[in-house]
Length: 453
Ligand code: ASP
Image (cartoon, rainbow, N blue to C red; front, side, top):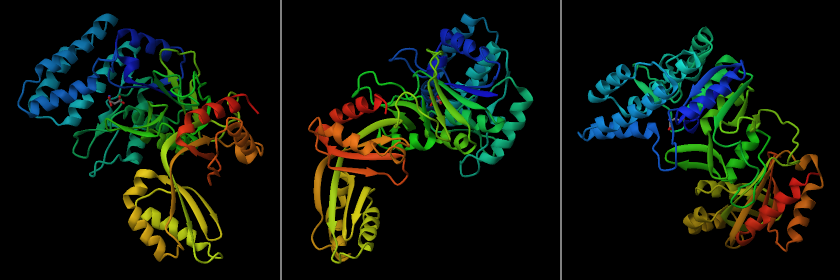
């Protein structure tokens, strides 16, 4: 069985609904479908979820919310009419109006986007419908009760397949509606995939998976065919980072928000692969995220490459050359001062590490004083203006030529290498260069490693 989740842009209008139906019906294993609310049809458009939040705000301020609710009703009406669906939108919107008028909370309001969309999609696909409030449950602290949810979902979904389960929401202990953070339909899909023991969790969006490198730096980078959950975590840490945008935590590559962070746990622990696919290019295989490593074909050795500027290199020397413990104490002190030291290199009583320049400056004096207490012979030597490039993949331990290739590639372009570090996880190799060289270094390394072994 396959669980297929479709994001907001995949269900933004009737034409997109048609694509979704073609995709779902093309493979009879797609038995559980998880929709988001309709997203943007064009860049200046509004997401239905945002419009629902606006209704709630207006009601709170004592302003009329009916005009915005009408706009939302209009969007669903257009889809239903275009596809010839008979769902009683008037009845549904009458109920929603009454609830908002009575002062329903923001979570209730926001959840209606998926609630209505799920019913439209179920009718269109001729699938049954399971209200997520029946099976996704949160505890008193507002945290997802994952085990209870798992058994409820298992029972309710398997009884109804083929079935549509709306994303993004569930219910709290008193029966009140509660939503995940923004982008949370990904989480619903992952929970459903775990519950039914799906062979794969398909996450249909508007990009053909993750790219190997940032397209703002590398022209037309290839997309990642396969990557493990661990590698992805490592890449997103450094790469276009784990975004925190509009309250949306998302694993992202090259700036595009692709996957909600909390959707990784349920499937990765259950050993279920996530396949990121593009609704607008259904023939493209997208990116397969797996629990165990798979041999890579298109970008051998590494899964991806990413970089970030704004690092400082900090060097310290302890009193006693035999004292390896000095390094450990310094690292602990750096953490205690709110820093996240990366790529530490230790030899005898010497230690160096990279740290976010802003974090270091903030604590510079206190940290220097602490280092003296711990036995540093002089104040920390600090070099600013570094960029960190990380090459992620199980490459290096299995290919001894990799490090020399990195050096040669950068040397041939006169890019000085400040440091190279093999992460303890053995899946990432860090390269420190001056900030001014970062883009060129990424391009060079991409070219070198996309050639293959
Ligand atoms: N509709 C919700 C949002 O806009 C949830 C989702 O799309 O996953 O955040």
